Amino acid sequence: MSLVVINKIDEIREIIKEYKKQGKSIALVPTMGCLHEGHKSLMEKAHSIADITVISVFVNPIQFCPGEDYDRYPRTLEQDKIVAESAGVDIIFAPSVNEMYPNLQKFSDLTMVVPPYELTDIMCGKSRVGHFDGVETVVTKLFNIVQPDFACFGMKDIQQLFLIKKMVKDLNIPVEIIDCPLVREESGLALSSRNKYLSETEKTDALTISKSLFAIKESFKIGIKYTKKLFDVCLTNLSKNVELEYLEFVDADTFKHTDTINSKTICAIAARVGNVRLIDNIILEV
Ligand code: PAF
Image (tube, rainbow, N blue to C red; front, side, top):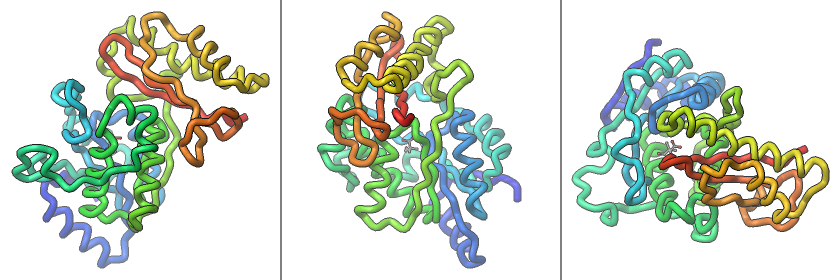
């Protein structure tokens, strides 16, 4: 089957209904486009587990905070089609903002899905207030529209993945969430659509983000378990041109801060290089 691009909710609903009638399983990969190898690995995973692979390409305005890069976020649908096709995607759902949020005057008019405060008052949720409300709301809408059996999310956005799994469980949404590993460049830099904004020098600085995470993991391996010490390891490795937003250690099962670092601890970082905000994380498993 060749790739089709659908912009309308009614239209994709009809197509999905037909596939469901035929007993076909559906996997969804929600994206904001500007697809890279990281997305490709999600799409390939989706393609390997379901009969029909759908991706959404939608730069979701309600998950951007004031002053963030909503307007300049790269929109590259033609290129995305090529990447999606090469990964075995059957349908790209690329709605307009008005299709997803008809006649929306202000975001506060919208019914929102809001994750628990204590799980968003840390890491990215702390600096991007309301971001995860926007993510959970759009993902719920996408689940309702596409009704997938599976949905694939990357472990780079580790807080997002945790919150979506919790939302699916709490709200009994009938979809299986598939965790997909974070993909790095050979240099170690975590793949991100925002890497496009980096100049060559900024990229060199950005590399010290993953370098500092790897150094933390190495230190943990040789027995350093105190977060204060591991924090210092991070600072030693981070370029002075990288502005640290947070370095946090949370338990992989609860997403709560942890004093005792163990092999299930997630070490997550957000930092700015120039005006580009990047995130990365590592699980300290040995
Ligand atoms: O991870 C992303 O790209 C977005 O947050 C998502 C899940 C597509 C929702 O807009």
